[in-house]
Structures are given as C-alpha cells and as structure tokens.
Image (cartoon, rainbow over all chains, first blue to last red; front, side, top):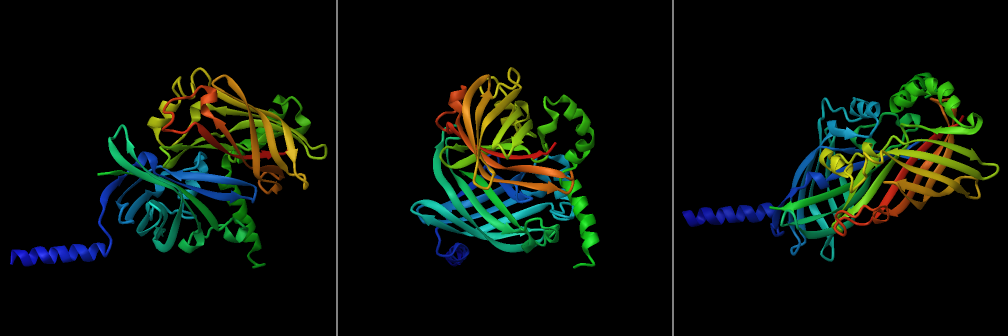
Amino acid sequence: MKIRTALAAAALAATAFGAQAQGATYALDPTHTFVTFEISHFGTSTNRGRFDKKAGSAQFDRAGKAGKLEVTIDTTSINTGVAPFDKHLQSKDFFNVAEHPTAKFVSEKFSFSGDKVSEVAGQLTLLGKTAPVTLKATNFNCYENPMLKREVCGGDFETTIQRSNFGMDWGLKMGFPDNVRLVVQVEAIKQ
Amino acid sequence: MRADRPAFRFAAAITLAALTPGAAAQAPASTPAATAASASPADTWRLDPTHSFVHFEVLHFGASTLRGRFGPLQGELTLDRAARRGRVQVVVPTAAVSTGLPVLDARLREPDMLAAEAHPQAFFIAERFEFDAQGSVSSVRGEFTLRGSSQPLTLKAQRFRCYTSPLFRREVCGGDFEGELLRSSFGITHSLPFVADKVRLLVQVEAIAP
C-alpha cells in the first residue's frame, strides 16, 4: 500500500514536470530584476519607465535545458521619473491599477543556445487579459555570487508587445503608438 | 470618424496635458523668465523636462544589465540648421540618480561613486554637431564632466526629428542619443570587474523652440 502510494506520487511528479528534469529552485533577486518599457513619443524620442516592485521564482535545469518561471509585477510601482505621467499610466486609461494591481508572466518553455538560455516563451497577463509573449535573450550567464556564496543565473531579455492585445488602446486613434518594447533584466538565486 | 474628430482633438489635448503636465505648468511661466535668463534669448531652445532623461546601463557579472536614470535634465540648446551648427549645455543633477532601489541610489551618491555632495551636478557641453544629408542632427561631440573630471564624449543620434507640439504650439526638436564611457576614467572603480567599466548612456532629449 505504501509502495503503491509512493509510486503514485512519483508518477504524479513525473506528469507534473513532464519529460523535463525538475532542476533546482531559484528565487528571483528583486534588486536585479526590472522590467523597463519603451514607447515612442511623437516619433521623436523614447519615453522609458520601469516597475519597481516585483516578485517571482524559477525552476532551472541547465544540464537538462529546461526551465519554468513565474514573475508578478506590481503595476502600482510604475516609475517614469515624471510623477504626473506615472499617475496617468496608473489610471483607467492605461494600467488601471485600482482594478488590476498586478501583471503576471508565466513561462514553462525555455529555449537554449548551447548552455545559455536564448528564449523564454510564456503567457503575459495584463489588465486581466492573457496573451503569448516570447522574450529573447540578449545576455545570459550563471555565476557564483561572492557575497551570497550561491549560484546566480540571469540575463537580459527583450520583446515588443502590442498594448492593444491587452485592451490598452487609449490614444491609438490619435496616433499614439501600439508597440511597446520591453527590456527585462532578471537574476535569480539558487535556493 | 469625421464626426468623432472634435472629441479626439479634445482627448488629444487632455493626453498631451497628462503626458507632459510638468512642462505644461512651466511653459507659460518660463517664457519670460527663462528667456530673460538666457544669454541669447532669440535663439535659445530649452529642454523639455518631461522628455529629457539619461538612462545608464552597465553589465553585472556578465549576466544582466543594471539600469538607472538621471533627470529631468536641465539645459539649453542653440541650433542653426541652415548653418549646420549647434551648441548644447546640459546639467545632470547627480543626487537624483534613480535605479528603483533606494539603497543602491544612496550608495551611488557616496564619495567613491557619484560624489553627489561634492559634485551635485554633472555637465555635458557640446559644440560639435554633425548633421546628415536631410539636415537632422546625427551626432554631438563635447565634454562630459563628472566628479570634477572632464572627458570627451560623443553622443550618436539613434533618431532625430522636429515636430510642432500641439501642446506648446511651437517647434520641438529632439531624439534618442547614445554614448559610452569608462567609469574608471572618472575615478569610479568600485566593484570592478564584476560590474563592468563600460557604461552605456541612452539619452532622451526634446528641446522647445524659442
């Protein structure tokens, strides 16, 4: 009976992680994890902003070339350096933070180039709407952090989304751009 | 569509006000005041504080890029597109560094980093403007002063454009510029080589016509 339970548990675990090796758990380092967005201003210069509060974790198996990631962004923490612009971005016209205080990115598909992560494909939930988003790596490295004395893996990722896919269509008819480039710094500490 | 136009126009005005309220608030006041303070009021453009920032990027342990922001930038520009000449003078308040991490911001203000107390301002003064065939600014070469050290710095335009701002009802010229510096050449050597020496600067700048 006990053996059967153990086998059933093992089978469940195997199903949960599919053919992928489970790898180790990594906690997102919030001091080296930021999402910066870029949107064109009158086709002239680029407005940038970032989200200062976020949390998340990852499963990462470098040898097995597999990974999972979950990141929650606190949309109230948007920061452009221009307070009235932040306020407008928090309003119903854009992030509607009163009703949607978080955005979420979940991925179970990491692609590799050699032993480095090259792409992370997943689902972005913003304003309660979910759409597929693939982040492309422009840097990736794992290193032994001398202060933490632990392995840290991280990189730089980027993608361009259409905000209208998430129902954020304010100003589109007036010519404000739909495309928003996301530039993501992420580091995670092995647990 | 046509029936909706006045509504859009109204909405556009709100948007612009919302997107650039700081500038909106400053625009009427600064017209006489800033002009009076300027050396040559007739041709001095001033930076739009809501669209003038510098972001820096530096690689952390060869893994990910640390980013931070300075601004709003303060400054003035003279631009003679016909003669293909220009001069820009930008002041960067160093204590206003913003990485999203208050602890790191405080560390960056210390004497071995930005030395914000001894050197509350960094400066970029440039008089060598290059223009492309269409008359757009393609690069700006000048001198950058940080922690009291001055080094040549070239900012290359990734894009440059002039347009009539519906908010200011004036011509606005601006763009995105990028440049690179070695922080060690300004005496900032902390955390080398784990945090890279090479710092990439991404400059958003828009200037409002006189």
